[in-house]
Length: 222
Image 1 (cartoon, rainbow, N blue to C red):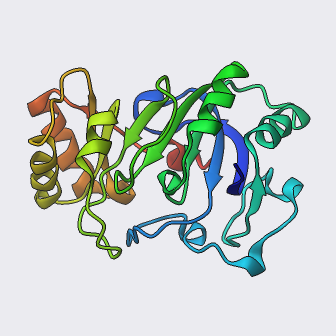
Image 2 (cartoon, rainbow, N blue to C red):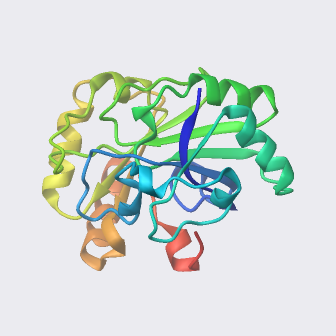
């Protein structure tokens, strides 16, 4: 299978359960969710005019929206050529679950990597059993896609973006559909706003949830 890859780069995972872990980010192109605060809007459209050679995507994209088709084998080969040392691979987007990720995640595990998917929960999650799935539910976005109960059930971690009390209410409605035992529940303030951070901290303390701060933005890294 060929995956439309926007960029591949090595960094530190900046949010959620894996915060602080060296990671290889594989960002896939394409997303129909339409989050207004999205900081990677260049990944939304899969435009033929923006297709590039494979080697170009082994660096951060910026705001171009370029992409290249790579197989799982070519992605792993690229890790070696770039002399990347991280062993944790984060598959993100865009919306990575628009694609069947079983072949990619299984190949990565066979090559000695751990894997994590960051998804909105609006598509079926298809990946290896050992993959850590982080669902960041996107409710009532421009794309009008529902958050799937099956995605929430598969999630190891539910990391919810928060700005107002309404977002807490929306999360409560989602969590009422599933058994949350064994799942990590995180609240993540949207855009590091002070009021959002205060609200997230308050609710995390009340409910014994986890606060997810986007540390990569404070550190000014990708």
